[in-house]
Amino acid sequence: MFKRNPFGHYDILKTWLIRVFGVISHRRYQGFNELQIEGSENIVKLPERKVLFVSNHQTYFADVVAMFHVFNASLSGRQDTLKNLGYLWKPKLNIYFVAAKETMRSGLLPRILAYAGSISIERTWRSKGKDVNRQVKMGDISKIGTALDDGWVITFPQGTTTPFKPIRRGTAHIIKTYKPVVVPIVIDGFRRSFDKKGIFIKKRGILQSMEIKRPLEIDYDNESIEEIVEKLQYAIEQHPSMLKVIPEEELHAYESANKKREWSLND
Image (tube, rainbow, N blue to C red; front, side, top):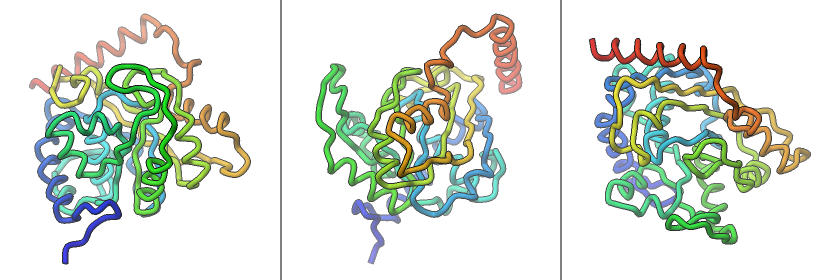
C-alpha cells in the first residue's frame, strides 16, 4: 500500500520529514546566513541513480542538510539559489548520506534525521573518542552499493570534520567496485556558522559557500586506489599541498567581504 525504499523506510514518511525539517532549517542558509551556491547546472545533468557525491566535511549535520536543500532546489529549476521553499513539496527521495552509526544514535534528533536517508556504518578508525583499528564490514559496503543502485549518495571521504585529514581508502574501493558518477563538492563557512554537530547556530552573517563541480573522469578499471585517492584530495581541495599560510592581504580581503555580508544580512 505504502511504497518503501530498499532500506524499508516509507516514502511518505520520508517526504514529510524532508518537508518539515527543510522548512525549519531553511533560514540557516537563506536568512541568518546566505549560502553562496555555484554549480547548480551540474546537478540537473546527473543520472537518476548511481551518483556519488564526495565532499569535505565541517559539521555533522548542517553540511548534509544544506546539500538536500541545494540538490532539490537545483532539480526544481533554481539556479544557484534557495529562494522560494516550493522545491520541498516534491523532494527527491532517493538521496542518501553515509554517516557513522555512533553519530546517528547519539540522540533523538539524529535518529529522526537518519530516517531521511542515512546509511549508518561502523567507523573502522575511531569509536567513542578513541582511535581503534577495525576490519571494514562488508555489510556496510553492500549498503552503500544498494543506495547507489537506488539513487544518489553523499559521502565525506575524510571521515572527520577536521580539515586536511587523509582520504579513507574505502571510498576509492567503493568507486572502483560500483563505478558511480563521482561529483566533488567543496563547502566552506559551516564550521564558523554552526557548532560541531551543525545543530546550533554559533554565529550569524558568516559567508557560506558550496561549489558543485563537474563529475570526475575516472578510469575505474586501470586507475589504482592511490591514484583515485589523490584525485579526490585535489577535487575536494584537501590535498596536503593546499595546506599553506594564507597571504595577509588575502586574509584582510576575506574578512572585509565577511563584514559586508554581515552588515547586509542585518539591514
